[in-house]
Image (cartoon, rainbow, N blue to C red; front, top):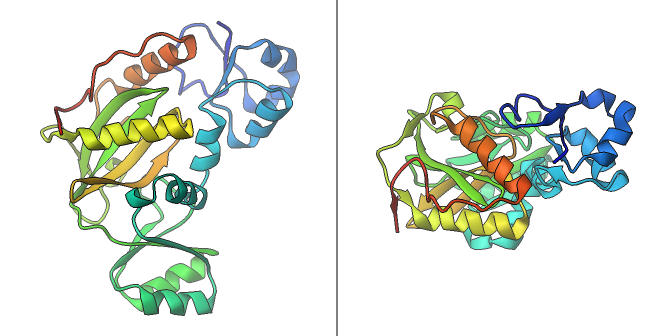
Length: 266
């Protein structure tokens, strides 16, 4: 199988992969046309590779498009599985909308920047002054209810395979490992959450993502997903991801291993 990657660090350990610098892709059009898969292009490359060269892309174009910002992602979730999305308003950042949000939304609530990861750009709003400062710095108001949780789940899917599922628990508002949250391996993983994410990724054709999921009254609630997710906190996760990528690209059977980092519970 002929594989070309534009991100050598994401494909370490995959056999027979050729690396091409993204900015040099037009110098290698013949090689790109001959490849079976093109791996991890930059977002700016996607339209050329997918629409002009009509190549198979991994992660899938849907993973790129829906994962590009929280507005696109949330609107898709609200259409596909509305009962699994926290109450969310997405509005232009105008003085009128700021006043409207402060009138309708009880404090505290969550406000987010539409393009951020690792817990950056996520703010707990506890006063009108905090929200007004957020609105001044952002052209889009992304307002979401604060869920009654102490921890959340990271669920990693590659291809159609559950690669990892684990709890993250922070010491403050953020649970992200990159923001000081810790991975909990001692807590059972709700099968309702992993089954829900696997069903959703199959429906939407998202094939490489780390989903952040809260459990509220036994129901999974989607916070967001990251197309490019970190590997911190779970030993061997990079190798698991690479093995799952290989199986997916080569059409190999998916092992029925369940959640690999913790026990499961219904």
